[in-house]
Length: 132
Length: 389
Image (cartoon, rainbow over all chains, first blue to last red; front, side, top):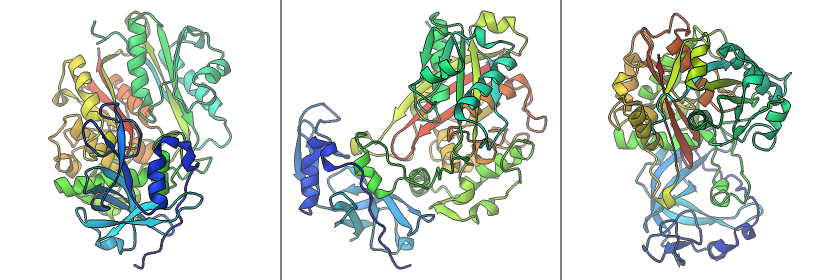
């Protein structure tokens, strides 16, 4: 079936969580910038400015935008249908996203995907993934 | 001090309504309270502890205590979604054991059906201050697709099939045919389930629970009071509660928080899964049941599909009779919170008051497990183990 892009909603403003500004600035520049725990070196999803492993500091680092599908589900009851997923980034963390620009019937767990930014309604462009 | 046996469930009542467009949520709470107290043989003036969850109208327990004009010395409104009521039993057990109250009333009520909520398929944004919302809501997380992502992954790792999941609905429907209050009383087949419309792949319409108005209530008391009443004795012998989330990006969707809430409950009770005669297992979706059964130790991890297949959950036929009222899948999921009805049906079974067609013989040990929140993001597992004395 031909892919139809749904409208992407956004709640609040990027100032709601001011400490995650580097993530939003990255989105505006077309880059996926995630916090990394300075103590453990592990990337964190979803973004936050305190390490959820050590309560220590984080640094904000651009990631490759490469990943693979960890799991997904196509919401057939929506119009248009959309595919929600967790994508496992090459750098480690599994992030919630949508898989776009594809025939949903062909999607498989483990499939390689790559980053794409799509505008949201009332918010910044946000990270999505399409088959690589 | 072990809390085992320090409290009993003396009253349990499920509201018979499934659509209550002529009643407020507050009135439903009060009707449930009245029903459970009458079931126990107590009155509202006997209640000295009150428990609800955060969805009750008003600030925590305050409006409901005021509306019902209760005079209590202990309150608790811990909210972990549909699993709040197992948690409430555990907290009531603690409060009673420590002398904070003697007769605890727990109520739940709501009317999502009358209010037209698309409970499973419409993404609901929380407050933007909720730290995850801005990173998730844009992607359309609803209830159904969050649980569906767990199913997709479970199928991938363990070979679980849609047909195996369907057996869970089939079992629930076999039980629901005997429940005059159940929303869905037709017995369905595996083919009916897998041929029903896809909602959120791989979950079909019949993999999902009903949306219903209603509620329920429980009365938990100290042993001396329970033994002075005229009802069969149902003793709380094990409780456990634990939340599970995304673990900062180390998301693992093939197991639920039952993996953590179960062990302390089993340990307190001093029994093992094979001792259980009847199981109430939260059934928001078929996959919820399958994962909880594995995580509570009823079968090996990954073997849930084989365990539930071929009628193994049907009372009178299978090895583990489950949700003999028809559960959330067929009977009732009041206020989108099915935890309390799980406990109520377990109490019915232990008292020998389930429908004769589904009553488990010599039912002396039962479990009632809840999963609240979203299995695909953040949820709570809560376990209650009960014994007939």
